[in-house]
Image 1: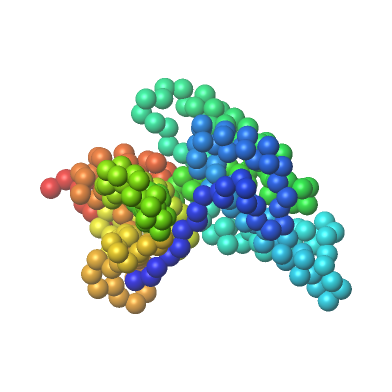
Image 2: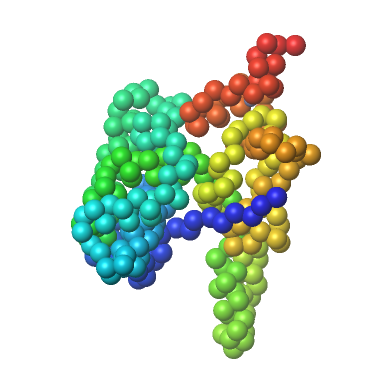
Length: 279
Ligand SMILES: [Zn+2]
């Protein structure tokens, strides 16, 4: 069993990682575009910001001759900073995402996704690109990051933001008291968790099986702050591959296969093969 941390969303535009001096107006335009189109752009931007921050730190630390900023050093720093994100590459978003059932023109659908991502990247570039890491601000890298999140992310429940609002209220009894019955309604609403999506660097290395030997889940009361646990469904022998189900494995073969199209593969686990052959 292992706990794994998630990546959060882009921080509010009032705070920027070290090594980045964003254009605030452009950053707000980028965020507004993402909120209106696909909020995964916010998470992809967070990765790009983290990579710039880490590469800046590496350049700042420099070598025996002190801090460096020449193109070769920038490339080396970028390569090191990018490495943690290279392991879960799945495909470029607009090329690999499954086409929804109600879309008849696949080419137009993929072109539209590419245009959305291109517009988003242009806004992000205006906001945070200082010219040191041109290889990071390319359509291929951005499309790969979005693809990585779209195809690896797990749905999670997150605590209602009203919980922390309530805590803040209760630290000021006079304010809480003046709210009267409104406070009770806030407390009631705060008990309903929000829906979120998270990328878990370790858990998403697990391949799919319709007879998985583990499940990725949040344990009520234990996995707070977005942590996730991989829990064995039974004994797992040393060297045995750990698998999880990407879809509802209680569904019949046809529904499972259709749901797995989102991940770009046809399942050939022992159960699928048996069910394909029929009773
Ligand atoms: Zn299967």
